[in-house]
Image 1 (cartoon, helix red, strand yellow):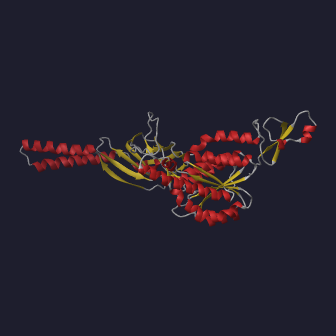
Image 2 (cartoon, helix red, strand yellow; image 1 turned 180 degrees about the vertical axis):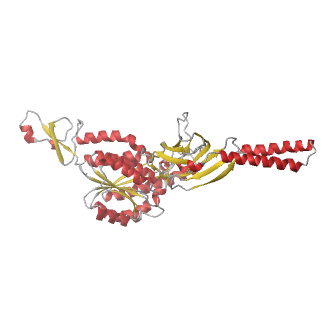
Image 3 (cartoon, helix red, strand yellow; image 1 turned 90 degrees about the vertical axis):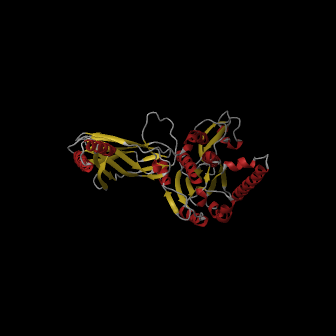
Length: 461
């Protein structure tokens, strides 16, 4: 492949070693029976074998006349399949018979496609396959590699190693080449399953589905007959006077609002809750909120921050928001530094001029909040509506219910102390006008979406 670096040489197969060992024994026995000096027979045999091996290697297909071209998937969500094809083109005059190994980084999850595979686990790393090559002159063979990545980010191949064997399969030629490709592994977006139910609630709030409650907001929608359960304050007395029935006004939440989702990529985001880092759970919640808000007609921006901006998406078209968010999130990793709350607040206040909804996905552990965010949060709530969302550890709640032994009671007391500290931190944030969402990983995304819908329904957004 033009521009690709390669290295190679001549290789011997196991068949050559077997012939050398077995032949030497037979020659030794034969020379002894014929009363001939053993070294003479062995030397003659080894020279003859070397000539045959050299001829076999010479007759192998030339790898210089072989082209390698890649095609296939360039993006995939974590835990899903990506397929990358490698076309091996034989431009030489001899048939190419041999083997090929397409090496990838271990986290790419290189595996051989098998029709019997029905359950594929994230993290499964079988041995890399070896592919048999049989390519006639002027033809090509396609090698398909199935990847099931185990980490986010860019996964790249290592080297492609090709071994072309001679007619006797005693020796051949081998080369290793770099054939560049990149598969970007995006966050999995497991909370996508909650999107239909939240969209249904959004439609109810917008008044597109008949409901018994009045949609709140500041944009007048329409008039309809009064039904039991309607707020009497919504009665339009002038329209009622012109009709025989009581008429109420319906409202819908304003559209084209601005939502800024902030991912804390500092030290606390590196902690694992279950088998998933807090940052990954925060990404999942951010994707669900972005999908919901764009469907609601709002503009959504993304900011990843610790002591500097790690990633940013602003002004994304509605149809491209999720794709751009996923692409930026793919390479994010936690930094082992504290969140600079003062820098983040200053950035949001100075850069986001329009009143917006700021959603900060961080940890509400007592120390980082009390010493970092809490003293600065007033500047933010004075300009914007603020939601702070945090991943809670379900093991703490389980430990708090433990009884029966002294160890269990001690663990329960420690867990209850931790839960009390989190509740106190949440209360302190709420006193500053912050909406706090604290939920376990599999409930964080829908809980954050519900908080957004509640603000929509209340006309606060």
